[in-house]
Length: 143
Length: 143
DNA sequence: CATCTAATTGAAACGGGTTATCAATTTCAA
DNA sequence: TTGAAATTGATAACCCGTTTCAATTAGATG
Ligand SMILES: [Mn+2]
Ligand SMILES: [Mn+2]
Ligand SMILES: [Zn+2]
Ligand SMILES: [Zn+2]
Image 1 (cartoon, rainbow over the protein chains, first blue to last red):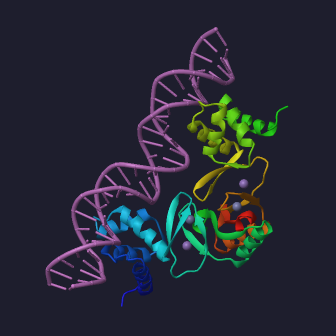
Image 2 (cartoon, rainbow over the protein chains, first blue to last red):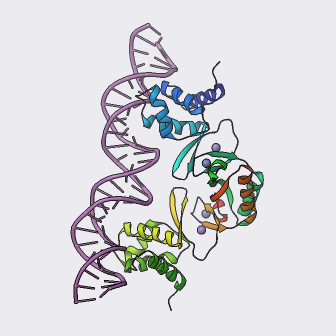
């Protein structure tokens, strides 16, 4: 049995519901995507160019967007670059980002989430989504 | 005496330190910019096109960047658009944004800030900056 | 298995928002 | 007043994706 059994099932379910097809490229991109927690389209393109030199960058973007619609991925805009977050095995979380080495740490903090709701309520807002990103230096980059 | 006395002084101080010049365009853009809390480059361009039809969009962008360097403004990337925040009279704050009507509410919450520091410390990070944006519906847009 | 149609692909053109280039103009110190 | 350096507006270039389109492929059907 291959790894990524669950994710592949999720993807195929989405494909079935929308009359979409399971292609060689989508399989290739899914395998590579699931090997990491966060990756950019460019980086995935470079990784896959070795295995299939004819794969187009547009196909990477289209497929990552497909993964987002299927609930496998989420696009995260950190600083200037867009990272695709491999989310099928995670709940909601926010990020710590090292501006020196690019290290990304995920965290969940219910106290912060609760305070956000309080702030919103106090101002008459109903929150649909939020962004919380902490930028700084990881322990290795502080020296 | 004109309004914006303090901001003009701040700008002139920055100009002096960097061998930059006080031009008619910079005065015009400063006056318009200080009349609002948040504004996009495009909107400022439209507002000023009436007063001076020859003013170029590039000059707006250059001048807003100058204001950021002088500490008068801060670029904020909300959703897809960039708002320039008139910050000379404000301390640090985060934002609530209505995705329906574009309303922006500023807030400060020390409890959230403290929890952010705790999260960072627990992961060995030192925070340099952060982004916290709450997107949702304002009270008027909930119906 | 052969056929057929709709989905998919790769290459290249296009898009929005911002920055770089450059000749002409303006500021301001001497 | 003069002159060097900064600034301006018009326009091209840029970056990061998305769209277009003709050729290919998936996969349902007979
Ligand atoms: Mn993540
Ligand atoms: Mn603000
Ligand atoms: Zn680091
Ligand atoms: Zn609203």
